[in-house]
Image (cartoon, rainbow over all chains, first blue to last red; front, top):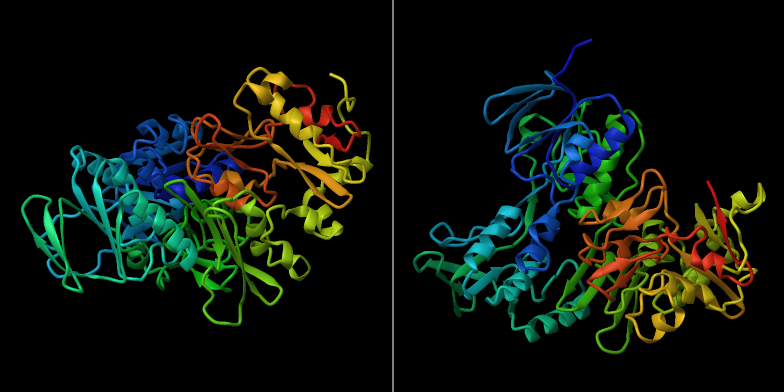
Length: 440
Length: 144
């Protein structure tokens, strides 16, 4: 049998990579593990960079695992090392310093990169992106003094950047080509609720307008000319138009890539000893019924976990994913899952407006709940998410879904029992443990 | 260890909710917890409709969706005890766990800081407060 430098090599160091390591170590007690990260940080939580910039958490709050994590799972952590190429048949990878490392099984958890659209003049102006700890540090440094910031793109990254910049006393304008903020995560109603909060916090929102031209004005300063001819001067430009999967390594290795790395049900790529998980990977979307990329932390973490289990020989299929978002802007939380903007009128839409900014929406296809959104009062939203993921028939409880007291009480008793009282089975076999007495 | 609700015994008195709040209060004194201290959130919820009711708290799932989904790493399942615990110091209050908990058993807890709160099975007690104080034994413990 061939001997390798490592039993398991992991390219990447974020949600998918770390959860794969945890799963691997949980099952393959003996194998050696190597983690390669082009960044210099121990594994940290990328979504927390807006909290860091806003001053809501300290740097130590960024870490996803404890300081001795790699030692605790007996993994070699190769930090600041970029993997340049992979040789699937030779079971080898090559790093940017030319080092060759052999592996028995490999995980690609390469994640995403910011998408920078072609805008006239963009090469001449300085801009920042907002996806990494380094980006966050740069933004903190650049906003030491109050300034005018322009954010291009009102998706999740752009809006989080805008919110963090407001906390840094910046005067912020967001420009979005589509006619509302958070166009993919939210529907019209929730989007306008968020927009109102943002405006009240002083963020300028220009929607339905693209940037036509960018002009440098020295240093980080510049001027944006919008499609309608209006002009916006800025001291800091944030490009947040979107993200793309990082598939270069997979492509040059000859793996199947089609808008994302393709994997089978067990997160295995077209090369049998290479697995992939996270934001670069296409998996089955439970709601859409087709392969797609849901570039979300919880999805990446779950894919990583399944990849790790399968690399250790488990043969357990990834259950599938769905789009979902948990957002909060200026005190207004909005949770959503599945389809919030039905593409045609074959879907049934139920909405409910409560006091203040309370808003709820359910989207059904026939008797199946395929989407939900809750703004304001978000308690117990996960019950709806689970009904979406289970593809449950909700015909009999449809009228209660958006009620404030909605819960398992609305389910038929048999369903309720199988969902929450599984452990009852244990009761039949013996006396309940512990003193059940009322006195203390 | 898991707490199982028996709906045929639950009378909907909500003493479980009250004693949960007391147990998670600063003084653990019922008067102070409700009158003079910041009142903790309840970590058990009585669902009620007509004459049916039952109390529900975190199931401490084997494959806990809240743990996998947690952005900060604050939500962890203790490998030895199996208890799912949220480290409120690390929790940033992103609500992703609320979005994925199939039981609706995680709630916003902004009493001290922005975070979530959930059932911790009362680590300081031999029997969790909700179980010990249920007058009709409608909450029972199952050891696994």
